[in-house]
Image (cartoon, rainbow, N blue to C red; front, top):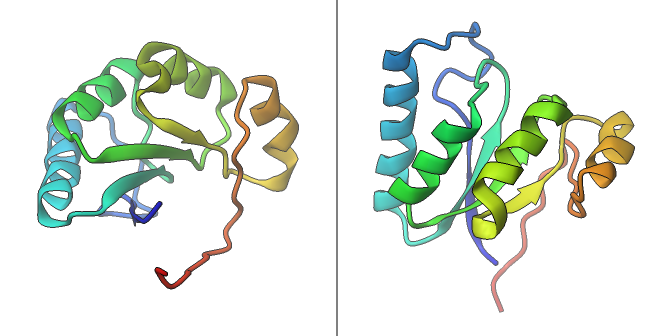
Length: 122
């Protein structure tokens, strides 16, 4: 699978959960989804703390959204998102090596740390 990993526009910014910010972030992901033929992998990190309904709406809005990578380690919220969205997305853990047992406990079987991997297409 080839995918474009997408992080929020203001990586490392302050946490902000206003509806305008959530709407703007959804627009940002949707624009990237329209601009590339690649599937999208959203890396939920830093200030991005979506609720399950928001992720479900984003998955419906962006047909190329294929994966969601957790970068916060809030396993309770991540499990709520997974329960809401189901197998529409591939779920990835990535908040830290110490979270691997927790990810495994909520049925996450794919994990990556901060390492980026690039491979040439055959």
